[in-house]
Image (cartoon, rainbow, N blue to C red; front, side, top):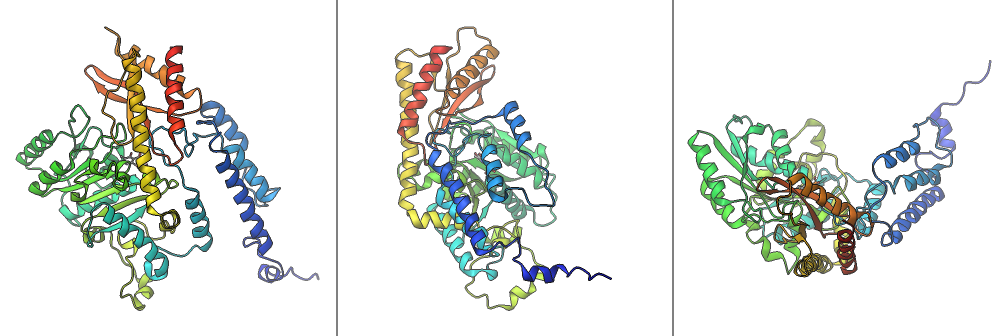
Length: 500
Ligand SMILES: Cc1ncc(COP(=O)(O)O)c(C=O)c1O
């Protein structure tokens, strides 16, 4: 008879647990990860503005893919990092200085350090009772932000994974405020402009508001929501027996950076007793900019504000924020309880910071606050104000460069006023040119600019008399973008124009 193998627990007590690693192994992991991150950060300036995408990227991605085996990957962490190094160039270089597309973010190195610390410590921050120290630091950030937006002491906020979830939480809060737990949502009507981000329509649908109940209000020549059209639509809905409950205004649209008339919408909403939510996912950050702050005048009058630190505070993706002026509305819409959480209530909870789970949809969550707290504390708030001011200035420089070219005879136009840090431009339409042909020329123009790989721009479709016109846009928001990159963008525009 042979001895039975010792049970796993006995074997494991004799040798290190592989999931923990020994202290030298852990040190090696951190050093290897740090070397990987440093190489990326050091190469950012010189890297092409766009990596490999499309069919070639998908082919190479398939070659990197490995089955997840029962045994460790041969070569361990270095081999895994090697696969990551192969995957990385198959991407837009979104954190790079030349990324002027969509809405840039950046990804502050210190926020990456914060993620490493937060992940390694892995404290529970869903309920502040479980980690009041960390919860206090996160609340310090939220309170500071609320003050910057002009909110008072009764406001509350949550850090979300992004702007879409912040909009969803705002819309659930507005719905709960108007209709309670079990109101009839069939007559519930929401209003936004035709330029609103699509996450607003999605959030309404997820919140149980029928899609047909979203009114898309007309915009003016600057693509800002038209107050007269909003007021008329609300009037006609009320006359039809419907229940207007929410207006979503924009503090910086994704397309063009347009800021809706916030004061006037706030007046109308107050009169009509309608919740006013401002989607400032992109533009909200400019409340921190001394030179642009006044362009968001009236934002403090909103009942709630979405703002994305992974855009305007240059954090890595996965950091959104919702602020609600009267915080108890947020708590009423999101509160919840369960017997298995009862032990938390046995502790002394006076003066405890607010618990994120009472103000948002998540229970377990990462310690998101550290991503903001660490860079804000170490760099100081003034560094962020200065960087945001620089983005406004760079957009102005690009706008001025376009105007100079137009004055010198370039067949370009700037269809919308430069707003916050977004500039739009396109080729002028030729006499009698069909829309499709004009759009095709504009698609070729942006392809010509991006092909030079110093900057990466994205396009959108903006309304013209006979349809939608392909329009290029420059959105300056990365902390890494400086004047030389904007001058490169203008030079590459000149070269692309010559090639057309
Ligand atoms: C104005 C606006 N609102 C909402 C969102 C959605 O934010 P997220 O991508 O963080 O979910 C965006 C994204 O670009 C945006 O520009």
